[in-house]
Length: 179
Image (tube, rainbow, N blue to C red; front, side):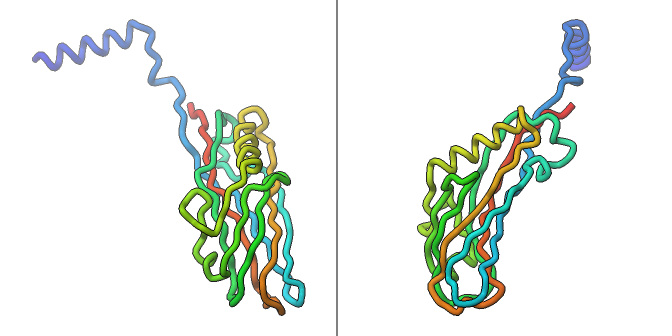
C-alpha cells in the first residue's frame, strides 16, 4: 500500500512541477573513423606522399548530423598493407599541420600502431593534435567542415613492390543531441 502512495505522489509532483524530462532531448556519443590510405608507387623511388580531403559530416550518421555539440578523438593509428621486408618512416598531417611521426620495420605496422597507446613507433606532434580537435569541435557551428589528411615518408628498400600502402586511421567521436 505504501508503494502505491509513493508512486502516486511522485507522478503528481512530476505532473505539476512542469517537468519535461520525457520530452527533453539527450546527447549520444557517435563514433566514426577518418581514414587516409596512400598507395606507395612500385618501382625505384622509395618516397611516398599523398592526401585526401574528407567532409566530416559524411562520416557521421545522418540522424546525428544536424545537432552536433562537440567532438574529440580517442585514438590515431598508423598501419600498412602489403608484404614488404624493409622499414618505413614518415609523418602524418591534419590540414598541413604535423599530427605524428612514425618509424619502424614494415612488419611492425602490420599490426596498427597507436598514437595514444604505448607504441614506440609513433610520436605525437602538438600542432596536428590541436588542429584535429579544432576541426572536430567546429562541427557544431560548421556542419560542412572538411579535413585534409596526408602522409609522406619513405621505405628502405628498392625496388618497391606493387600493392603497398600506408594508412592513418583517426577514431573520432561527436556528441549529438537527439530529440
